[in-house]
Amino acid sequence: MRIAHTALWTRDLDAAAGFFETYFGATVGEPYHSKNRIGFTSRFANLPGAEDQIELMSGPWVTDATEESVGWDHIAIALGSESAVDALAERCRLAGCLRSGPRWTGDGFYEAVIVMPDGSAVEITV
Image (cartoon, one colour):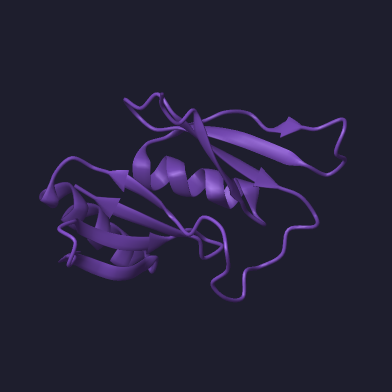
């Protein structure tokens, strides 16, 4: 088994697509507009070398999250090395989208947390 894709709601589909293109080198597909659920639009982001995809979804009913709640919290993307985490964290710090800098966690992960334009968290790890 494997995860085929992960879906993420966003209020700004183009900004989310640009985020994954800019910081992860993702190839993002053209928008899909549902004929069954009017207003629903999605785009699939493909990370280099990965089989699974990230589905970016939007609709006029999507609201901003105001606090932690039941459900998925974040996605973690493995970059392959500490130096890659450090480099992307620095790019994101300069761009204003670094939430927490690189560190070793208590459970043994080297990671940093960056945020998408709408505030959704993305962990970058080795």
